[in-house]
Length: 149
Image (cartoon, rainbow, N blue to C red; front, side, top):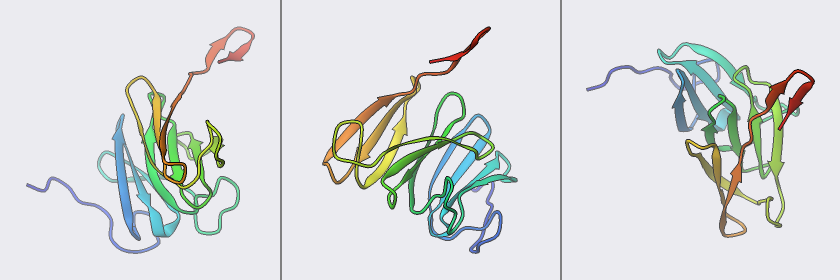
């Protein structure tokens, strides 16, 4: 039984061109909208909240999104096959940091997807280097003198 449906083909908010993956966590629905070069964020009812990336967007741009994950702090990890990176955004779509692109450990080429477990370990499929790499996210602790990892 279908409970709900949202979206249709197109380029506007709430429209998709080759959606390839969805993640749902803490009331957020994140959809990889591959051929529109973006990830769209919705609430649980399918109402548009934010967009990450756009065609031709150089700063924090998403060129060929292939996978997505959400950690325990609602950071959104986007695998970009074109750039060979994982880019990490906050729930508002602001770029926090990025990592990857290389052949040494801790770097990767042609990333194809990722999974984040309940302990915030990030399992990344590193296609070109024929391996899976595991990373650990460490939350930022706020203290009276600032932030520390």
